[in-house]
Length: 357
Ligand SMILES: NC(=O)c1ccc[n+]([C@@H]2O[C@H](COP(=O)([O-])OP(=O)(O)OC[C@H]3O[C@@H](n4cnc5c(N)ncnc54)[C@H](OP(=O)(O)O)[C@@H]3O)[C@@H](O)[C@H]2O)c1
Image (cartoon, rainbow, N blue to C red; front, side, top):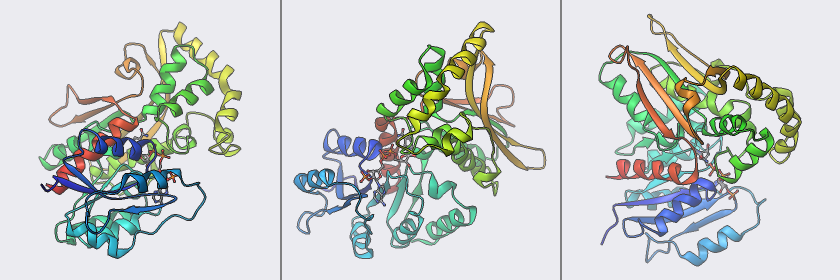
């Protein structure tokens, strides 16, 4: 019996791994796996069974040591994926993967991504991707998972814009990781310990400095601002990092937790001062659209009263509140788990079904 959808999965880390687990379990009979790639290599399904990679070959790929050059997905492989109405699923954090998207889309392969970089990258590169998608016979490009994992943020915003509403402001907690850190700090956990737990639970970016410096939030804010028509670049987002830039500059992805430990005492004192005033530290982003349609975006750590909606979030939850002409007095709010492997994988799968069916 044919599958509902066929996928080629890029990335076998927190998100890609969770996706493959779902595909081995509850969706095994509904979604075919045409191929899997990580930074160490590629596994393709056999010619005589094009919709199922061999488990032993996948296990061998996962067991390979890191360090080899990133694999190239050849055009012939993409043609094979296109012939089965397949979907290329990007669960990597690769910056330069836009070139692969363009080749895939041009061949009729749908692209579904959790990777913000191609969508939040230079405006002209993103426009080129959208152009290729428009010109492609039937391929679709979907990226709901890039902002707040499985929360319906891009779809909701797209519906508001398409139906002629006028977005005036978007207030958001866009980073599940920073939200988690703020919640743990409020509970008395040292920052470095909270960061280690966030990494263990799969909330952080592959390089946690992208969370701590605000780059991850700036990318999400850029994606949202572009949905309302702005030609904004990530560098236009007025950004205050969560921890001082100097700490991030002297650290690497491997040493960042050690460097951040030097900030533990300062954060503890700051959070305690706020607690005595019945306030909480949160990391807020805001997108404003003025009466002439000009869009600006900013993000940074702020102290809010304990009754503020952002202060009430638990764990790695996120929140996006849309104030529009139609939702002027009571913003339309989307809220829930904003990070983690399983929820992000579910967002990718929802986009896979939407693209392929
Ligand atoms: N974690 C979350 O909560 C969350 C939520 C929303 C969106 N996202 C996004 O999802 C993406 C993945 O995040 P993650 O947490 O799963 O990261 P991760 O655990 O570091 O996994 C990244 C994966 O990408 C693979 N990879 C790197 N370069 C590649 C290449 N050129 N070709 C094929 N595969 C390549 C890596 O290969 P190796 O295994 O060989 O290193 C690894 O398997 C990121 O863009 C992130 O922003 C994550």
